[in-house]
Amino acid sequence: MTKVDDAAVESEVVQAPLGLPSNADMAATFKNVADHSQHIYLWNYERSRAQLVTLYNRASVSQWSSERDLDWSTEVDPEVHVNMGGPAMSLYREASKIPGSPISTWGDKEFIALGIELQKASLSQFMHGEQGAMMTAAKIVETVPWIDARYYAATQTMDEARHTEVFARYLHEKLGEAYPMSPFLEEQILVLLEDSRWDIAYLGMQVIIESLALAAFGDMHRNTQEPLLKKLLRYVMSDEARHVAFGILSLSELYANLSEPELKDRQEFLLENTIRNRTRATTPEVWERLGVNPGALMPFLIEASGKLKTPVNRQFMSGFFSKLVPNVRKLGLLDSNNGYLREKWGEAGLLEWEFADDTSTDYAEYDEVAKDREAAAAAAS
Ligand SMILES: [Fe+2]
Ligand SMILES: [Fe+2]
Image (cartoon, rainbow, N blue to C red; front, top):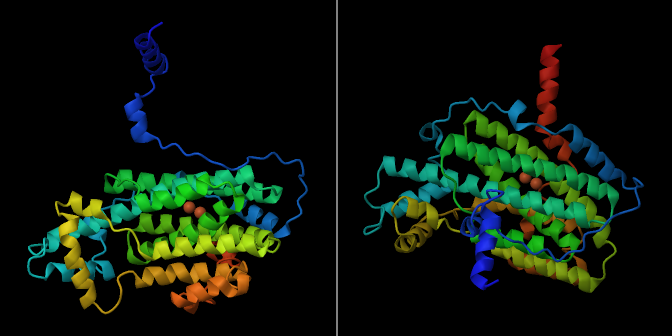
């Protein structure tokens, strides 16, 4: 058989019997990920980690359903609910006042359109990030050597599936076309999915990205009055608080037994990923969708940000670090290797958050699903 014949047979096999998409279509809808970790089968079923058992039990009863618990018939008019306040919008308004700015002719109509696109862009990254969280949690199920952690990670996989689903549905039904995943977020998650060490999936997802996500969800929750989105975010956040707790509980045990060189590796990982997080990705696609050349706008944004007193993402970064830094301290990673990370983070000004929050143990207080159920039961009795 010639090569041409091979190709003909191949394309017949792919397209005819199963009706699968073409190779080109698949390239646009799939991303291959090469995981270098060891997947293991465990024979020890003994429930020896009491705190993880408690967390798993809590996760099992606090599952919610997008269909039953959220009212998708809610009418959403994005123009009514768009957030026109906030530091980012002030920056763009400031940039529009500078002579020669590509947005100098903009009025309320254009800024409202911008506000809607920015919200779509954020929700799109939430959606893609949640799918990454689902894959990372599934990886933990397959790689972690403790049965109690496996059980818990399986509940988290379900949580993240629900989160992906609700953000995708909200975008699709209420706002319109989603944005692609930002290369910055994609790179952050792929690193975790490909790493051979099982704890790196935990450290990157449960400790760094979950803290980042809690800050971003909190920001949006504070700034929206749209009831469906508000409730959806409340429920997602209560799940995320448990996920952070899961990370801290598991990693505390592991890191107490690692050598200083092994801990140094983890400190380096944190350093690299948090400094990268300080410069958040810009959103060029948003500007392109609105017909503005992002490159031409950039110098005006820089000039405008120089005129404003507070940095645009100060509140967001504060939300992020106030969760991240105390949890890293609890893992012992600030102080191992003679305080290597304490020194580096100190220089970057991150230690002001060292004692800020306690998301690792007070997850029960964040359980909004349980609170709503108790209130409903009390109202019915
Ligand atoms: Fe999530
Ligand atoms: Fe999560």
